[in-house]
Amino acid sequence: MSLPTYTFVAHAWVIVMALIALFPFCPRALLIRAFRFALFGGLLASALSILQQHGRPAALSLDALKAWLQTLLTGPHLLNLMHCSVFLPSPYPIALALLPLAARSVLPLAAHLRQHFSQAALYRTYLAKPCDWLAANRQQVELFTANTEVMLGPLLAFYLLTPQRSFFQVFLYWQLLKMRFHAPASAWYHRQIWGHLETTVLPPVQRYVPFLLTPIGYVKGWFNSMGRA
Image (cartoon, helix red, strand yellow):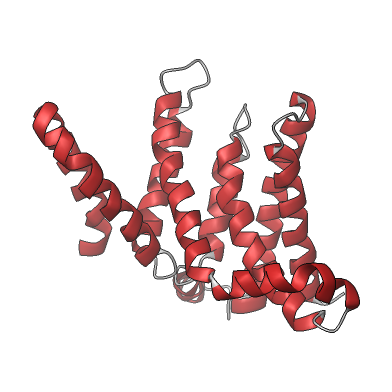
């Protein structure tokens, strides 16, 4: 099989495993396995997408590796790989973490189906309309993905109050959110979500709990610091 075909299979695997893990009545043992299989599939899909779109470093020198990594930061695949790496060591499954992973897999999956299977009877009967909808509404899918990624941040912070807490995981994920806030492939979508949250949350905070404005200001400054560096 070709590299695009392997990538297509990896994306399909992610979606199937995510659907199993997100099924409300899924047995816990199966949920845990599907959760980890989806993340492993996401790692593989991201690595294959990097090879497909960016290739390998031009040389094994430090300068070549640095230039290669800088090109990776312009696209979504390295950040998707980091997303999977953050949640793989988790001792408990966080189903919400699979939503952005599946959403980011469904777009290239639909594009591959439209490109290579548009004449197949099965595609025309069952898949043409969903794939056409995804192609026409890519921005909405990206905004949904960014929304779930942002919502994961407070959720992980809440887990710090439970026995399932992992300070290292929370730290890594908020660093990832900061990178998505500045990365060209995701910055616009994430800034839309954060901007909406700011206009929704700040007025009641300012009115009822104004002492929270100071830590919120620190967080905003920290998020913007990468852009000033």
